[in-house]
Length: 495
Image (tube, rainbow, N blue to C red):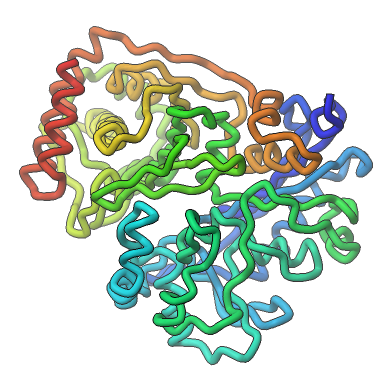
């Protein structure tokens, strides 16, 4: 057995989320040994959403120290970091932040997106996502350059890059997963220099980029004192938080998918080839082994519950909702406007089909609405040729609601699994295990723990399919969903 996968080995995963930094120490069998987190706060005002990057480092240090406090440092074999996708900042040549971090959903760069898409049209089309959305990192970089006095030698850092720089004591390469939304060409394995120059991005501003799973350095003595991670521990290039959760769920074989239901709904899958989407709502990460990880992030999700039922007892509402038998549906957008997957519609807004009576039926309509969006995501993926017939796992906070997971399985009409440990930090611990030379697939086979399997109720599926198709048809009627996708959804339901 490889030393990396021996039961005594310890691998550390670090997850930089929106609300917290979480560190998890996992042994070679996938058993979590310890975990700790520290809160993060940000500033939101209109389309603005930013955080203090220095807070990431102090929170990461405290979380790592606590997680490793009872573990023999000689057992630690590696560390990997994930972060939110599209979060960026500018730093000086020593790595000190020059700007706040523009978070993944910051919308200030909307005026720059058209120019990015005009200049880089051929590259983005070849990469399969056609256009960059305003919240992606490259438009935000242009906004930062316009609003910052940029000194010579400045650096663009993705959220994870600041942490790996601090851990190593020097700048480290970025991983291609975080670099995707900054315009990195995953097919050519390089930055598109001509297009970036035309956009006014200075030479030397962007980091070197490597594939996820590459060893990018070792933890320095100064960082060891801050974090408790032993000096000399190998650092493995990580991935975005959605990809990290996919690794933790073991969704790595062709056609396997992981549906992450948190504030929003994110689907991540595995394909032997890039998946190109004419609608531009699906994009592909490059996997550590060279395969492709297609996926998309919706603007719908569990956040609709906190928005519509602030302060409510969600367990009690679930119990009441389970007895209603209601088939009303809420289109579960988390915000006031805008959808990005399974279709792009900036003007989309929440609506209700049917007439829910009381809080329990309205709550159920939200649960059912998310399930409808989820099925439409998979139908869209199937429509564009992505492999979707493999196993499907459900993760994220929403998956802890067992009734909701059963409802989703019934509407999907397919079996689903609820992995035992599927948080992003665990996925990074699995990726960190590759530091000693094992493949990610082998590490996942040893460390990912199977959980509960839910099978659909065919009778309930038959009752729910007309509700789903009515929801799809309403999206077409409102001009948000392409009729061809709806027709494909109908054909699949008929089968």
